[in-house]
Image 1 (cartoon, rainbow, N blue to C red):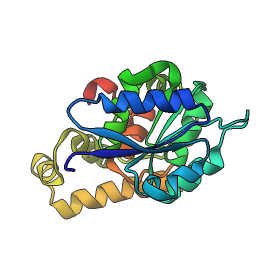
Image 2: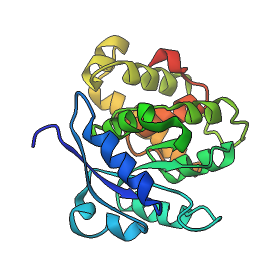
Image 3: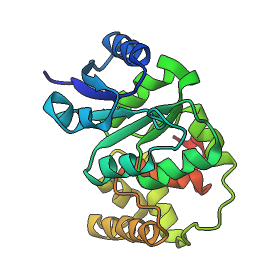
Length: 217
């Protein structure tokens, strides 16, 4: 079905999984359907869950230790992961984003943010829920890559434009040159241990590092 976003839910509380399925069934604008749910990451690797567009992932999973290893496995396999968990401390949020999670939400944020985050992940569009915004605003780490002013100009223009062709016209650059600046920025982030393989990931990095504000999006 055109416009349908499929979801696998990994959460060891059946009531939470049922709630997410209900919220998704009521999504507007873009249809969202939970196709698989369960208490372990296995649901994201087999059956309909193996091909789901988005994985909603509870970080705790029957223990007190955050499941960073399992999250990394999903990200490295190219999955779009929305972390949805009770933890809302800055370091955990930033660690998940550095691993490559698409978005991070506290369970207190509920359907008002979870469903839009799923829709954004399914369409590769940026989305910054409140708990992520707070983590970005208090991020004082020193492992930020040093981008050149031109790289910053290109990135900020790209975030605001629909295409790289528009960026090129705005800045007087060829599309090849625009791509080159974006690739350089990605390489710098990768070398800093904070990969950003997608436009949405680069937007998240730019917000974290103060290159743009939420009001600019």
